[in-house]
Image 1 (cartoon, helix red, strand yellow):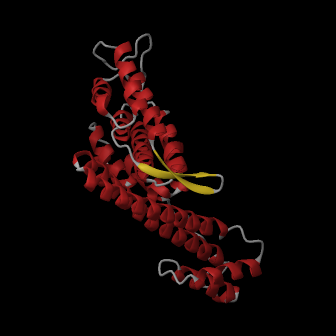
Image 2: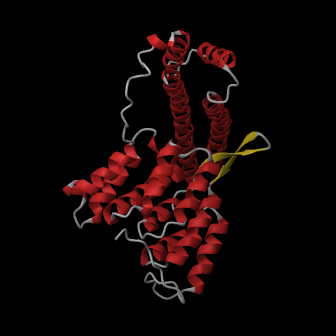
Image 3: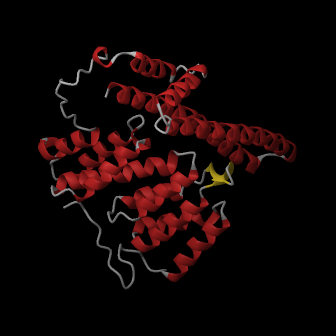
Length: 321
């Protein structure tokens, strides 16, 4: 039991390191976006300088993307070792990396492996008390706390945003799976909070993950949720073109999120709300010609004022009630 906990801490430390490195990628993406804005009004000589700066940043981004993948691979391999000797050897390899975010957890795991079972501080006869997960605690509050059971859904939305923005939560597949399962909770207010939290977790992944394959998967899950709260999130994704990377032939390749933006654009047409129509009108001068063409075509096909009902079809969103 103690060794298992120690290895879990090692894996979590490696995943945190990957998240830290990924944040560096996001910062470079923002710098590239700023340079792109400067390019519009720059003189030709200055444009050449900006292009050189962009190239330097793209090369650096590529190195960072590879580094993110290495740390994620290391995290996966913690639980893939074939035996005790293999595991010890792997942990010692991690120790040699001398990474301050990882070393303490690795040292603790190695110490536990070398400690006799009766000295690990986890005697077998000690009863194991069930511990509620973060999602479990959130849902319990939704069922019992007056502040989360008022009629105003804005209170639950605020709680959902706060939960999704906790460090590491949006990267935790277990948490996401648990909150997604809770979207069928029999308690209507707990169910609504689960839906809103799921939307915010997928929003975070869609807008923040440097790995655009994972980000696109989040967008696909998001668009399947039948709740009006996805509309402003989809608009946000549509309005934020960004650069990231995908894995292709075993290598990291830089690309943009045009595919995800197209998915949410088409879904916004289906939702047919006034906010969605306004968002499409703003795309007239978008940098992606495919997005411009798709938005223009949708507005031509449906020139009337959008009112939340797609012609010939009525949206029946789950409001959590």
